[in-house]
Image 1 (cartoon, rainbow, N blue to C red):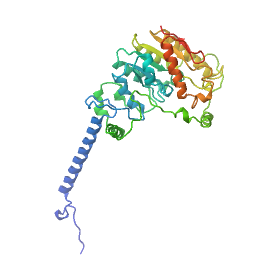
Image 2: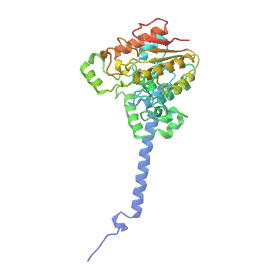
Image 3: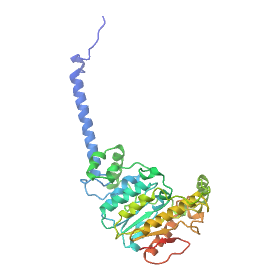
Image 4: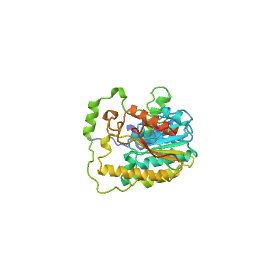
Amino acid sequence: MPSSISSSDPKSGAGPAAWRRFAVLFAATAAGVGAAVYLFVAIVDPWDMLPLSPRWHRVPISINARYTMPALAVSARFDSAMVGTSTGRLLQPAIMDAPFDARFANLAMSSASPWEQDRLLRLFLRHHAAPRFVLIDIDAAWCFAAPRNLSTGNRPAPDWMYVGSPWRGYADIMSLYAVQEAANQFMWLTGRKRQRFGADGYTTFLPPDSRYDPRWVAAQFRKEIFDTSMARGPAAPPVSMPMLAGLVAAIPAGTTTILWFPPTDKERQGAPGSTVAATRAACRAAVTAIARAAPRTMVVDFDIPGPVTGTRDNFWDSIHYRQSVARLVMDDLAAIHSGRAIPPEHGRVLVPLH
């Protein structure tokens, strides 16, 4: 005789009431776990940008510098800033602070578009009414910018850290990435993780000079394509120059601003008459004009033909120079600041301080 057990059979223990109890318990558990995770992230505050989090000493923890640099930009520990791309990341505040009598934050980020640099420096300026120095790294990101680089970034970034009130972070901070980075920050706070990124923004991202391998470098250069096409007349100023002019104009008049061109391998400089050479010349002319129109602003060009840029052993690839070259750049900037001349084969002062 056929028989069946109904899902509503009270003896089965799986009637509607039991399912409702399970659903309520599951929802309550999920909500509790979610609330606990949210509180963990909000209290640990992995990027040190939430107003109510404990005032613990946190360190930059994320590989994506777009998340870590805002906390440095708003910090009262610094009175000066450097912005740029990876070509500016090798300048060390620990070396630059003493000769400039300043406290620098290196806010340079790999592959930073002009738009990213602009809003990061503006964040710094909103929190520092009278910075002592601002250094802007003028490299290919500015001189060869595409229109899209003026309105978007090259990597994901948390908009709430850059615009509006930091209270907005409580609504926007929750994500799997935030949970991961809160766990990393918590591990550092409790001594279970070593510090990877510098508390002043500086981090060595290239191997030490002792590990320099010319064969590996030669292989890197073979992967690159250098433009040798011939230009037809002078190039137009880069599309990024109005943004740079606006950014320089936003810097307080009492701040010393240094616009500097980092050294690149000679193959990046373009053959005479090439499109690259013409664009570089137009960029320098535009940057020079911007500096001359701004108070206490100077331009230093290290990207010139000579023994530094002409020696491949000074580079890891065509744009990333070795730490010994970084030290040369820092020493020369310090010398220029103190009023001393630098060797003409190292660089040129296109616009002196005025």
